[in-house]
Amino acid sequence: MPESIRLTLAIAAKDIRAELRSRTALLSAVVFAALVLVIFNFARDPTALAAVDLAPSVLWVTFALAAMVALNRAFTIERENGALDGLLLAPVPRGALFLGKLLANLAFVGTVEAVTLPLFVLFFNVDLGRALPGIVGVTALATTGFVAVGTIFSAMAVRTRFAELMLPVLLLPFMVPPLIGAVQVTARLLDGRPLSEMLGWLRLLALYDIVFVTLCTLAFAAVMDE
Amino acid sequence: MTPADSARALVRRGAAVTVVALLALAGVYVLALAYTPVEARQGLAQKIFYLHVPAAWSALLAFSLVGICGGLYLWLNDRRLDRFAASSAEVGVAFGVVMLTTGPIWAKPIWGTWWTWDARLTLTLFLFFLFVGYLALRASLHDPSERARFSAVVGVLGLLLVPFIHLSVYLFRTLHPQPVVLKPSAPSLPPEMLRTLLVSALVFLVLFAGLVTIRYGLALLEEEREGGFDAA
Image (tube, rainbow over all chains, first blue to last red; front, side):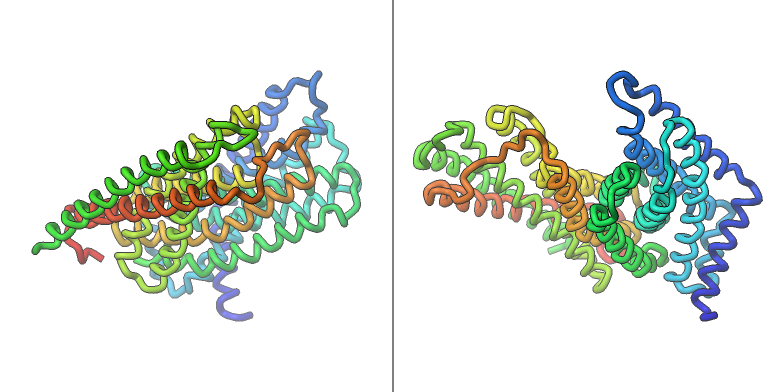
């Protein structure tokens, strides 16, 4: 296994292990996502709008908010006890460090999404049926893109005075393309539409992932340089 | 001449250019009201066009310059690029405010609504938010070198985000057309209107140069306060 891949996985494993030991952040993020779903249920007029018409938007706004909460955590944990300095002193290329952090964040956000989806089915009485593999796929595609941008922004945000506020302000504009695409594809999947109707959106999501994962990996050195 | 003196001279020069540009802008409105024909269907409401469109163009120019300077900064590490990007972002946000206030004022009598989720409106709105975030990030960082690097990264990522927002909003609109999408008519302008528009665009360019020069000079003075010009 090439050295850079081994280092990337080591960084990711470190973060995942730390998370599994405490589980507080993961639990809070899951509870947060569930609460957002509950609030959405009361924020709509059930006589005016069927739950299923609103379902794709509700699902993705919940995912986006939960990801934001999760991403805030990514670098704040490194601030304690000078952990970040230790990481930077370690002989790890900045690109591998970024990809490791990205993988750990994806695991974290992915877990929250995996718990939120059944809750969403439960609360909104949505029949996933054959749409499930498609929804898992589009979730992976859309999440990768905005978590990549979110990872680099959370590394910046922890250095600012209002980290918890700075991350959403910077990240939300970048969430627009993946979110629009994901909502459109999810709505068509739930409707049982053919793949050809989603292809344009899927291409856009894939392109977004390629462009921003590459760019953020390259730009990470500029964020971490001392 | 000390660096602070030359920075102050820069601010004064920028202020002079800005005053000239503002006077010229008043001239543009004389031209627009007295020497440019009244649009047949929109009447006098269309006169805001000569303010709205050049402001939008200048804002977009400013934002592109932020992205380009950010990319160049990451490559060349030249403080001047960072100062210019910061100045351009601030002036761009100011022009963005002009664009976003004149737009709804024009839209209300003509389209019958203050706002519509048209592709171009949505794109410029998100760009505006992005650069407000850019300025907020700058304001919340103390270390000049860190501030320069972070904002350069945001600038570059922002420049690359533009085609994605445009494409996604465009796809969204074309697949889900609104019941009424009113668009300003006249794909080609009569020559007199085009002339006034281009004069106004030129004036805005001068105004942009003046304001950026002021802001650049102020950035120099600020840096001197922070601890010398060669802190990086």
